[in-house]
Structures are given as structure tokens and as C-alpha cells.
Amino acid sequence: MKKEINGKTEIIGIIGKNIENSLSPLIHNQIILKYSLNFCYLPFQVTETNLAKTIQGIKALNIKGVN
Image 1 (spheres, rainbow, N blue to C red):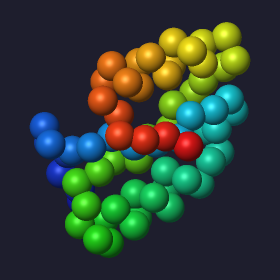
Image 2 (image 1 turned 180 degrees about the vertical axis):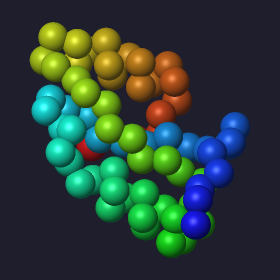
Image 3 (image 1 turned 60 degrees about the horizontal axis):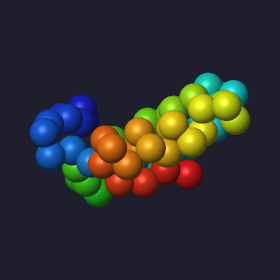
Image 4 (image 1 turned 90 degrees about the horizontal axis):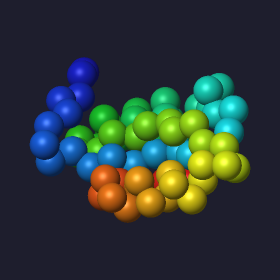
């Protein structure tokens, strides 16, 4: 089953350095699909030098939560 992303979809995710091999997006999005939640879990590459700007961006974009 495919998930439809729309204007009401809430964005959540993982932030970090070298997270391209993280299983978190796969695991979380499977749970989101199973329970028909209107969320999308995304990975966001972040380095120490842009962490503060990333947090500002998360707030500005109304991203609901990150690990």
C-alpha cells in the first residue's frame, strides 16, 4: 500500500551525521502505514556546523519532531 502525502501530512524524522544507513525511516514509515497515520518520517543530514540552523529550520517548517 502506498501512502498519500498531502497538505495535512505531518513531517517527523531523524537528524544526524552519516545517517544514510539508518533503518529509522524504514521502521517508522512501516508503522505509520500500518496504523494509517498522516505522518512521513524523513532523514535529515546534519553536521555540527549547521545544527543550530537546522533546529531553526525545523521550527520554521513546523516539523513535528526529530530524533
